[in-house]
Amino acid sequence: MYATLSQIAAFSTVPSNLLPAVGLLGLIVALVRRGRGGLWLAGLGIGGTLIAGILPIANIVIRPLEERFPKYQEDGRPIDGIIVLSGAVDLARSFDRGEFSLNGAAERFVSFAEMARRHPEARLVYTGYSSGPSRSEAQLAAEQMTRLGLSTERLLIETASRTTWDNVRNTKALLGASAQGRWVLITSAWHMPRAMGCFQKAGLTVIPYPVDYQTRGRSDSIRPFTIVGHGLQRLDIAVREWLGLFGYRISGRTDSFFPGP
Image 1 (cartoon, rainbow, N blue to C red):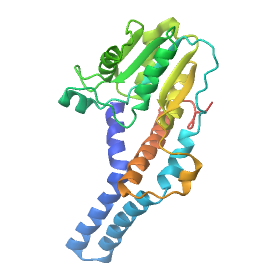
Image 2: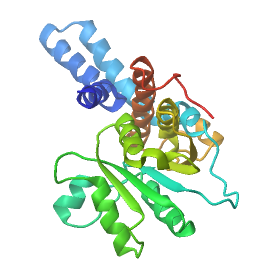
Image 3: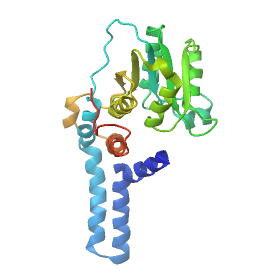
Image 4: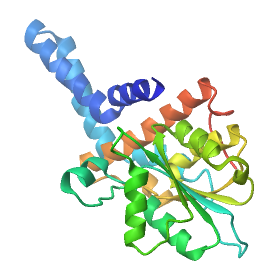
């Protein structure tokens, strides 16, 4: 239920949907009532779309998320396990085209495979999104890792999760007592605060390994976008994540609004 509600909220509140909808509503009102109110709404929607898509608003909003946790640094010590959260695989395209297909968060899968090779002593957990009984990201990822020559004997896959909280709760149940130790968590940098907050709430200690950065750093805070769609897409990610942090805090899935180190 929570997953469905969050998807509805995300669809209706992301700027790339909300702003054009306001503009369209304004045009309809202007045509029907022929008043200034409709034109004002249309201008707000169209102007807002252009401003949000061109100005570096998205970068300013997403950078605090990406920089909340420091980059992962190897310290030479062995680790007990590596956990990666789902979100790197394009499920629909993978199934429809019949070949493994990654999306814009491909770094999650790539870093997971790289860490698996670098730490042969570590157990592996892929906690993956499932949209149905036969469509699991974790299963597809496990098959691809086999093709890459990685042994799946030490790989545990979790296929029932639909939300970040599900990822954490199901991973904890899957690991049991073995969850204690030095475990590394891989997910997108902008998603790391919420993910870490969930792990902290569940009583699991993990080492953050943020990947999939959307910005280049501070300089992007003053660099405009040259393609409106790119700016809106990044702003959508940021808005969804900030709303997710708020929703997780008020629902008790995290202990703070903006979890940190």
